[in-house]
Structure formats: structure tokens, C-alpha cells
Length: 432
Ligand code: PMP
Image 1: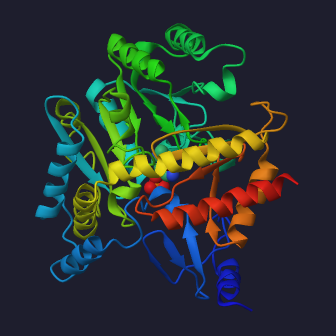
Image 2: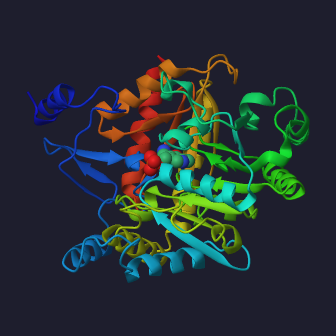
């Protein structure tokens, strides 16, 4: 019995089945883009803890900042005693993610909490109850975040869900455009958005529309530029706040601090977590100051919001990301991956689509070249094959037929080449 297998057996005996697992890999140590498993085997990490280690596993300045803070104070609760790291982190977030003339921020611990709070702030600011979200959306597992989440298999028997949540189809060009070119498809989808004011919900009761500009769990689907611009205009026309969930797409993944900066379309509120803290639980809501300030004192917060250790980890992460210009690295890593996959696509008809922004790249597998015939089997085979050969991979998508690459962006060219070679070989093998 290997140490990894023994650990997995203990997991099965002691941990509730509902805590799912994508992979059979284990870890004893991790650095950069490499995980050392319980048996001392080196694994290349293309999953990054679900997009959490864009700056790599255990970046030295981040580890040092955590150690130093641990020797000073661990907890006072920011609701009780004020400490500088929380404030400094908010100042830094405002600086890199400005939402108009005056921006403010608040910290929490997880992505789902950030989403919950963004909705609470939007409702208080507008005094309206309803929220519009999208198909294939993922926003977390707490009650409102789960309600906003589209994937039904994450929600079995978990209801009743939060009321006043309405859903539009996400403008997924690959899946839904059919014979139409992208411009026509987007025009049709914008028409549907405008019609929702008549046939979905009383638009005057809508506080916010929330979307991931590039969907994560839903399959790395980028919103078309013109749709996002149209959505912004629609929100402005109806006094609705636009919330962008950047939990997975933020912090350098797309070559920007947030993917909305790639689009040049500004949200009213936006949410961040994951790679912001290099693995420590820290998340944020950032937004226009007038909206952020509309929430009554005491209505947002919690015991552990913006813990000092997590705040210094995030500050050190952002500083490190700036020092090594991780946004530029993301574009380089993304370009390498994209070129290789586009080449592979020519020889593999099972690859229906390769898409993404920066280093947020997804590969969609379909049968018979048909966007509406998702091929989950080949996807599962490839992920398993990669895992057997030392590469940790993650699938995505409502139909589990998309593989997403979320490797650390500090990955060396040699590691990236090695990982991509394993991936390409496993795709070729899985086709047979
Ligand atoms: N929003 C998005 C876009 C996400 O990808 C996730 C996590 N996958 C969440 C929210 C929830 O974050 P957390 O798991 O930290 O609650």
C-alpha cells in the first residue's frame, strides 16, 4: 500500500462522501508549479487548487509575511479592534481595481461569502429585492450563492432556495450560436435580455445582475465583448447594479487584475477570492463607494473577516505579483498553451473548441464535431491518464466535457512544456 493510497483510504473512512474529490493525488509539499505527493512523487500542477495559486505554491515573500504576522497577533476581529493589514489591503484593492471616481472595499474569507455580501450590498443600495443571474453560472455553495449557481447536481435536495432569483441563458457563442455569426447571435441575445423586462421579472424590482465575465466552473466561457457592453447599458437604463464575479478569473489569470479590465467594462461591484491570498482564505467585495456605503453598519461582516494573517498574505501576494509582473507572465503562458492546443485541434476532431483570455484556457470535447454533443467520457479518460502520468488536471462544464488549465503562472517554460506534452499524449491516447 502506498502512502497516498493509505491516505485516500483514511479519507474514505473519516470524511463525508459529499465532500467530492476530482483527483487521487496527495500532497506532502508544494512549491511553484510542483506538488510532491505523500510518496515523494513529483506532480505538475495544472489545477492550482482550483485557480488559487496563480502566484505559485508557497511564494517565499508570502510565506515570510505569514510567519511574521503569526508572531504579532492572530486575531482581534476587525469588527472589534482595528488593525492595519486589513486597511492596507483595502487601499491596495482600491488602487488596482478602481470602480469609478471613488472606490471602497470590504474583506471576507471565501468567494461564496463575497458573493453573498455583494448581493446584500446591492439590495440595500437599490432597495430592490430581485437578482438576475445566468445559466452555467457558479457562485459558491452558501444559500444565496448556491441559488445563483446553475449546476443542478450541486443542489440536489438542498432547497428551498433563495427567492427572487431569475436566470437568463449565458451567451455561450460556441454552444448556442448555431448557424449564426457571433455578431448576429449577440444581437439576438441582447434582444432576449431586453425582453426579460417584459417576460421574466418586473425590471424595477431588480437590484443586480451578476455574472462571471469568463465563466469558471461552467466551462471557461468568455462573455462576448458586445454582450457585456450591452448588459452594462441595460443596467444603466434600468437602475440595476452590475456585479462581476472575478473569484476564478481574477488576480492575473487573464493577464489583468480582473477580467473586466480586459473588456474595459466597469462593474458597480465585483468579487474576488482564490489567488488573491495564495491559498489563505481571503476574499473581497470591491465597488463604487456610494454603493458600498449604502450597507448599514453591522449588516455586513463576521468574526473572521479579513483575518490579519490572510490580509498580510494577500498584500504580499499582490506585491509579489507586481514585482514579477505576473500579468505579463499570464499572457506568455496563455500564448504558449493556446498555440499548442490550436495545433493539436487540427489533428483531433474531438476537440470542438479551444478558447479563453490570457491563461484562462478551456478545451471543449464533443462528439461528431457538434457543440451540442458533449463528450464527458473522453474528458474523464484524459484527466485520469494525466493523473497517472504525474499531471494534475481539472475538468469543468455542466456536462463535464471541458478541461480547464489553471496552472500557476510562475510555471517555468520546461515545466509547462512537460505538462503540455503529457496532456497532448493523453488526448491522443484517449482517442483510440
Ligand atoms: N465564484 C466563482 C466564479 C468561483 O469560481 C467560485 C469557486 N469555484 C466561487 C464563487 C466560490 O468561492 P469559494 O469556493 O471560495 O466559496
